[in-house]
Length: 309
Ligand SMILES: Cc1ncc(COP(=O)(O)O)c(C=O)c1O
Image (cartoon, rainbow, N blue to C red; front, side):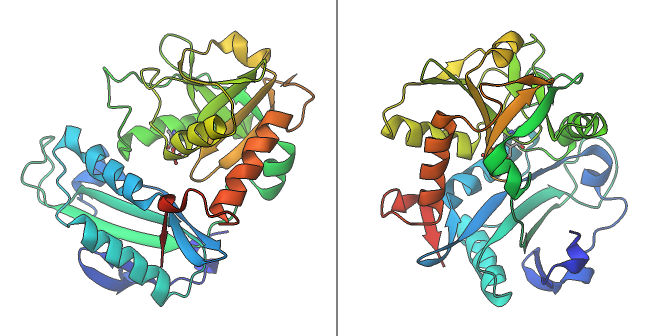
């Protein structure tokens, strides 16, 4: 579904609420040419206690930190971005939505060093259902190991959500879809598992969980962090500093993706090799059920993960 079919008409741009179609940038924007921007992806859930933003503070922290390697100093306080976001959700009567803050070097000149370019900031919100489809959450998805490798953090920061670096994810995702798969798994330069194009990966083996450590060229996903906590609280051992080889994927008992967009999506095959019984496994199911119980606020636990509107 494209934006035009969605019932949203406001964007917050550099301190103002503007009509959706008026939220424009100049074609000589630095970030458009060189990818010098940072962004976030956050979800607001329709809960029993009204709309609630999941782990807002953590996402905001990562948003500001993402800019550090590029000296992108977001010219607004966290409180201002919080107010703007809440106002966007309220004014458009959304019960649940995806939230996309972005900050980038704007229009001034096109030398590579953007020091004279202003940092422009915007926030958009829109309704967005299950990223990989409702059925994916139940049945699991078919994925393929990408021929595109993830860049190393010695090449570009891997712990920053930088707009330009997402061409790597776009290529992996396009390739997977062109070959008939729902999503890709991307290996790092050493040939071990990094992550999905927009997801972290978890593996279950002999009742324990493994997820690539943060030196494996992956993003420090906030859903990843949340799932580690949830799984440990359920009594599972989680190896969160693992190195996961490509071959371990094929012999895993279970595999799943985590991410703001993908939430907790089971993987039922990799490169046409069935994982476990070829459907959502029991450990994935238990953690996924708990995850949805938490985000729908059917429990009082983890209340400090939510910002109620
Ligand atoms: C490359 C990449 N890895 C992992 C994730 C998952 O991170 P999070 O759970 O914070 O959404 C994302 C999504 O933001 C991503 O873009």
